[in-house]
Length: 160
Image (cartoon, rainbow, N blue to C red; front, top):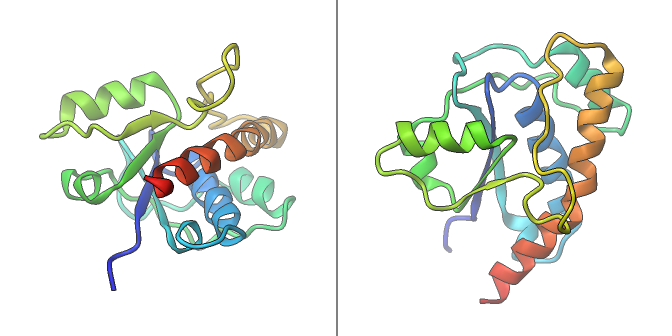
């Protein structure tokens, strides 16, 4: 049996945005038919230290939509993890630039989380770090808004 496809969500420190993205996308994929429901989703950071806890406000923002992520621990995006990824979804153009400059070989499968949204939509998801819970909830909602477009992209890839 082949390995499941791997999607890596990426932000800076892997304690706010990318763990929320990981939990949200994992939840959405569970409701999809095969092969999408078999995809594996993990998160990492371009400047992450290993083992940091997810921010309390990220945990609370996810809990408000019925998801749990309190066990998450941060990890850096390594060349090995990037090489294994079938798709990398990052939060900002600066994350994509860091990956292109620091990983050898530079990954070709890097997209912004909101890149598949209709034209005119905001493409980047700002960092809520240190802000109030409402900023984390807004960040979460920007991610949720983009999930249908990510799923459509994954369905298209699966059809090929």
